[in-house]
Length: 275
Image 1: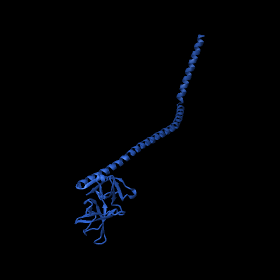
Image 2: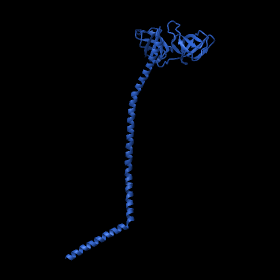
Image 3: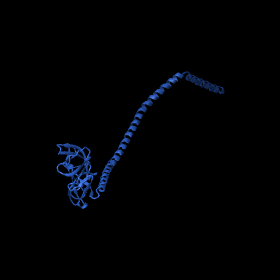
Image 4: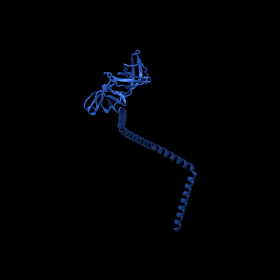
């Protein structure tokens, strides 16, 4: 019995070794087959991986683009908020600069006309339907305003006080074509002063009209024009503008066009001057 058991054990060992040896021999012999199978499986894996990664990548790119657009919208919203804050501040800054220039010009006028009454007023009313006709100021009798005072903007003549109440006053502008505002002036030339009358305004040429000249002296473009004060009511030597054109009908009758030195579209603070 012992011999039979040992024989079986020996037979099983021999068979096992033979099978293992055969399997190793088969595997070593069929390397090409194994490589082909491995390559096939690898290709399938790559195809599946690629097919799965494309939608994932597309989704990732979409989310990335969506986040970028969202960030841009937030940034634009912040910029719009800043712009909405800056715009009013910019307007305030422009108003302050304009006010500063007007007040500085008023101070210069006070220094130049120390013996005259010089006041500063703020424009509180100006009709868009009569833009070039008149303006209202926040100063009146109580502040020392009186009729026929000359009104200046940034140092240049723009009109004359025609109505005064206790707290307010009205200025007829020199650009008012519906009302005659005659102011005596003088044109300073290289050969002497020529006196005349500012009698009106030409809207098309944006120029004052000067007529009734007292001399035949040559007048050239660029000659400065000032008030003369010869009416006994207005102050002399206030700047008006400069000559831009001379039209001669004959030796005695000449019309001189004078460009205003003031900007009539920007009247915020003005200077009043009187005897």
